[in-house]
Length: 518
Image (cartoon, rainbow, N blue to C red):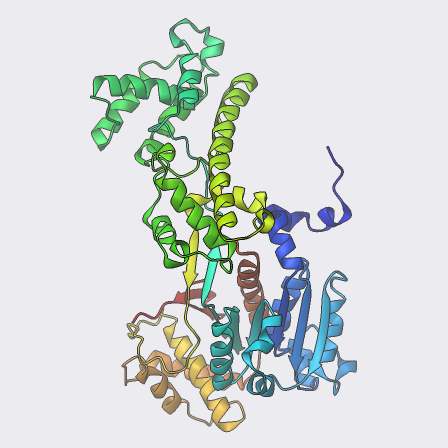
């Protein structure tokens, strides 16, 4: 076994989460952070430590005494110095593998002066404490270039963040399990292997080590022979099937039979049949009309469509080839594992022939798509996902939300934070206890077709005014952790991104993701 490299040892923990492909994507990524706020710096910290390639930090403010109380990446000695340069220096010290640059410039001016092409140097942009109008303008620019934008803010004990991207494709969504036994559609080699077990003539020790996959297949064949080839479907039928299995259970060591009964539920899942979500991807216009400019994901989706349409596939997805742990002797388990892996390899070989043919048709080189990416696509074919979002806009007149007096609904906090930001943009300062945010809240609610500000929202507004625009480090730290998680999902194209706007209530210790419907 090869000795892990220094980098593998350093990043061991996250390599277990998103593997070498995800780590490479992170190390090659360039992120722009607009606003060296406590929340922004916490997000930066949490993406620099695992190995982000480059970060450009844009901020025009000077370090203040207030910053030293809420931001760990400034100190008293730096008061009066450019906040962008100070935070960039301290953040850069966290990980020498990351390149961190500070730019002393007003983020709002940068957004207003640069064309959309300027932003293509970045893989993702983070906006912290920017005016609503600036976030809206930036969102439209980035959305047109399909560059993800994470906008987040905190004030007092409250915070929110939202992620906007035009289209985001995910191969590795990391479901709970990739196991697919395919006992309802067994292939010949699996059937032949199971037939090698003569349960009636096995010794008690050997009987106790028959893998439950084999037991399921043997007793499923007996059931089908008695029921016109049908699987147990109803609750009563499954109960009878379990009883049939347990009637053959040996008395001295029944663990493998207990595992067999515990996994009868797998028969309720039709193996290999693509779910509607996957069919929507293979039938998507981007998969139907691939070109030399198409992303690898859509070329592979086009290949999957051809694969499913080919008679040899029988309309079934490629086999993942993953076998769960189970009681069995080493010889039997390894042999069974080999059966699944070899079938998965055969399915991938057919799939590879198809996608290489498509690449040739498009005039693209075969190495445009690596074997590792294509194999991952095959293995995760049942769980592919495409996320299509919308720009961040203030005018939400086309959206709706069921606004009620329910004090547990964090929409009250969302309204309060948006009202706060509207006040700051209009007045150039944070509201104080003597100010009113009612008109701003009413304006926000009108976009959702509501006119009345409920008492609990008024309570939230009072709490926000009491904060006086201050940011608390513990709240920034929480948003920094959750925000960095979404950034890494977007960069690595792994795991499922947040869908909506997350609101955090630091007083109640609650989060909620709000989804606004049309």
